[in-house]
Image 1: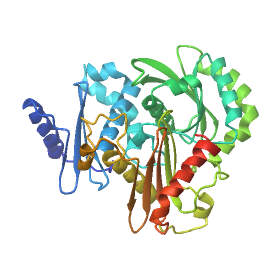
Image 2 (image 1 turned 180 degrees about the vertical axis):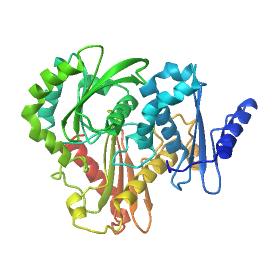
Image 3 (image 1 turned 45 degrees about the horizontal axis):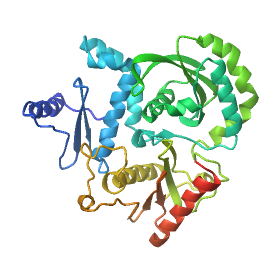
Image 4 (image 1 turned 90 degrees about the vertical axis):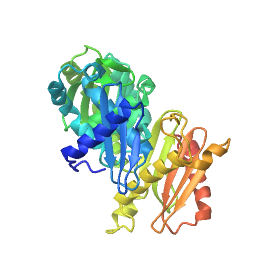
Length: 394
């Protein structure tokens, strides 16, 4: 999707008009394809109609529907559901929605995160997580809250137990929001939780501990931002400055360099289906990549390949448990003729290969170098999954 693509008023009117005409004829219009684009319509709470048009070959109904959900939930996060459902002044609503433009723009550009597509929480693994968890628990409790989170580069390092009990979509949006805001030493930001509290706002307090690392808490009217910043931040976090800086060193890879992976792997996405967490990287071997001035398969191409393969696998083969098949049906016709679902799938091209593995607790997606033998991808994938389930549990 190109966020800079400006559609003419006539095209926008036509897209909206055909949807309204279908509704008047008791027809639900959800998506259509043209020769070079795909269009998806979604109506939320019989109030807000969102339309997305994509010219990307890799776009699917699954990915575009998730984009529209993210956009609507971003609007709820910033201004609340009541103002979206009960629109009293359209011009005032347009003005209020400007506060979420940057957040929405983030969903339209590919990044070092995958949560917008998986609806899970992007995380990193660090050796010092035990120490950081103790600091976070103490800091959150002292700030009169049960909901705390430590983030590096917009990815979660660790969080309190009750933070993980929040809906994964809410946590994803909060992390994305913090990453989208301009760098600041501290913030007191009102937010609505689209799943947990869409009509009653909470206070999101954020504090920059070192550049790129923020600690966040959700709380009520108290304590004040000044009190937490002046009395608690230095007390709890100054002793662990080095572990905090270490988080940045594993941010792009999402896990320490000491975790060994096959040299043929160029990209990895691991989804913990039970905890709704993900590990995502296209720099599996960052030192090797840094020494190569020209990559045969660039980082942007790896991101695009991994996102494309994820949507392909979930919309055709690995049917997710939490997707309404009536709204977004499996696009592979043979699936309706079998009582079982696929647990592995792969694709092969001249520039790379992809492999997906589904287990009871995890989904693993890998992008391989083209020279990796196709018959060996299953073995490599299973060994990779073992690394993150037994050696370094995720």
